[in-house]
Image (cartoon, rainbow, N blue to C red; front, side):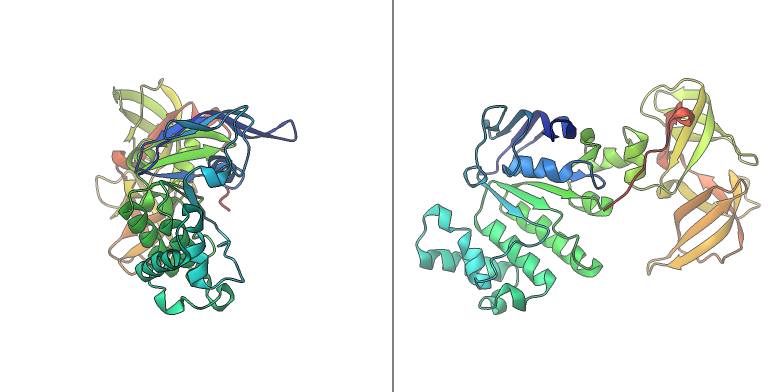
Length: 372
């Protein structure tokens, strides 16, 4: 049965002063796939290890299916939490064959040795590794080792699966293939999954729910659609993919979720932007998603500004462009079916559905966003 996971006010303090986690609270319903997204140092690995029982928390509580596994005075060890974990560095036993590495996960269930091996063979067949059953980890590529690690986690049929950036050491093509396997197989056994990554494309592809961490705090937890379309803070917007940012004056609120903004840069026409709530008339900043931008002819009456193509890259299904606007602002990841050449003058249309307004943003320092 899938487990539900509930955290209330979880805090982790190192060396009596450094807060790795601060008052983190959320709930993962049984059978859901949660991705915790954040840059290096945001606390996501510490949080995953706390759920696993590898780290003791300093405050708050963690409950799995209603049973407290961590509080100020309770700490249930990992082997008694009905969970399995897939590690970034594979964590395979070097002296055991592929088959025995997978079968090892079943020993705690008290099954006979032959039954453990039989179930391990079935799981290796599921992940396409049957021909390598008698090989040792040192004989395998990184992708093959990670699939063994995945098979070992899945074969135990635990109600909770934890993933510690399992794809970060793999090349792009293999990452995509293993991501699909993780999504398909974890849902096939109806497990609850908690997965950490710094890669926003990975997060959006996998998650039912995304939680964004910054400096040990959970700054937003929501569906992928709401994280992308209605980020709670400029940090969330920046970390989940922007084409650029524009300083503006909020001219008028059209509704509770739409405003007319006037760019501060010369030569730009006013345009509409989305907002989560009423914002005061005055300074603001618009975060521009790539989906908000459309290139057009300079003479097009609907364009909001002009720009010069700085770079153009073929992406197979079309072209991605980088442009420089007249005030020097750079916008990236603008997709078109047709190629525009470097140095070409173009017009730009800003669509409201990907233009996200934050009020009083001119006085707020830009947070550093470093993936790693």
